[in-house]
Image 1 (cartoon, rainbow, N blue to C red):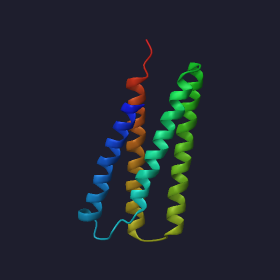
Image 2: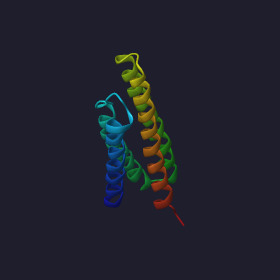
Image 3: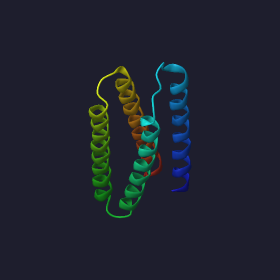
Image 4: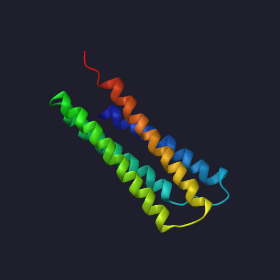
Length: 125
C-alpha cells in the first residue's frame, strides 16, 4: 500500500503541475478551481478503490473481479455525475468545454494508472 500511495502522490503532483501550467500558459482565461478539486477527487477515489480492491483480493478470485468491475462502474458514474452537475451549474462558454475535456482526460489517466498497477502487481502464479 505504501508503494502505491507514493506512486499515486507522484502521479497527482505531475498532473497538478500540468494543470498549473495549463492555467498559466495555455489558456487565456483562468481555469478556476474545478480541475484542482478534480485532482483531489480522483486522488481520494483512486485510493479508496485501491483499498477496496486490496481487501477483496484476500477472498475468492471472483470477489476481486466483482469488486474491480463494480468499482469501475461506480467511479465512472460518479465522474459523469460530477461533469453533468458542473456543466449544468455553469452553462455556456468555451471554458466549460475545456474544463470538461481536461477533467475527462484526468479520469482516463487515473484509470489507466490504476489498471496498469493492478495488472503488474496482482499477478498470481
